[in-house]
Length: 345
Image (cartoon, rainbow, N blue to C red; front, side, top):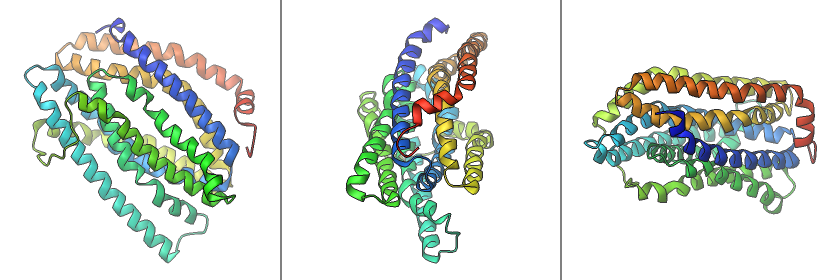
């Protein structure tokens, strides 16, 4: 595998990611117009980050660490290719059961907390919104599963465009909130939370036809004894701590910001969206494209090619990210003013 090999999928995913980031930036601009740096939006962001914390560990982290590499090995082996659908169905079942069980536990705990009212008044809005946002975990985990399957089959366009589906429902909820929920920020933010859950479901359904076209169904499989599942578990286990560091850091950052003053969580969120723009466009795109190719190289024992192309990918990231970081640091004030200085911001 050379960089020329992944040039086409890299360009496809980069272009689709640029489109998603532009739409995502528009989403943040509209959100800033409606909510600015308000206490209501602070509470929503904390409630939205908690299911995303588990998503990063259970879904996207586990899938990128174990599911895609192992499934790529089976898909690239003519003697094992017929087992891909069975493995995918087993992982689908495990994800569905695990996320549903966790959601039931969290929603039950939220109900008890609200009933007994033993948390500070500042935390109560977060708990109330968490009842709406946490089911998002189920759907976004299944969406990540379907994205993993499509990546294994070198289909990058739909996964690349998938975030736009959530952005559509997010923006629609922002405009529908004042119509159906009135002028109350608390009611309008609850409407946004429900829109996020619908968006997560739509992200999953958006990719279902494509995975079915590749012979993978949505059937439940309770046979979890396949050797591939054991390998995935062995790959995931030592990585759980590493995969938890990033999400835990984010939760700590936003919890600390929440303790300072109203609006600090929102301000941190907007800043994070901006600096992650080039990271998502270039870094994530290149990593997503390279992973199945590198996994296939390892499966075939092509260790020298693996190392050479990994180094090439890292150099590409440096060439793109360092100038972007320098530009954002220099023009930070102008950037924030142009993007967000309107409405309630």
